[in-house]
Length: 68
Image (cartoon, rainbow, N blue to C red; front, side, top):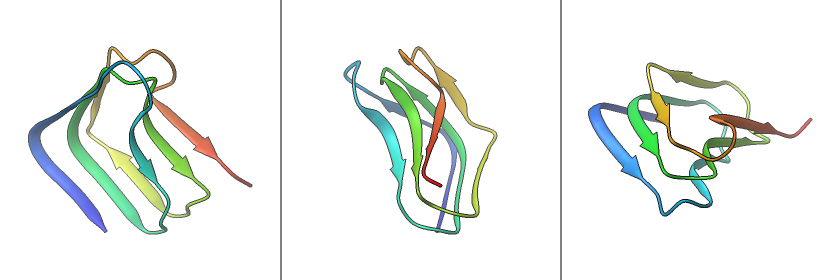
């Protein structure tokens, strides 16, 4: 799956995750993600590509990777 945008913004309420990736073979690019605890959580997924995103004003990590 590919999520590719040109200048789209994902704004949050100040908590939670902006995006949670649970599937393999996902590509995310071109997003601005702000206002979450964590912008992107990769949870036990493989071959995930995250490029050319802007992650701002999130409380914690920009990207968190969970799993073995």
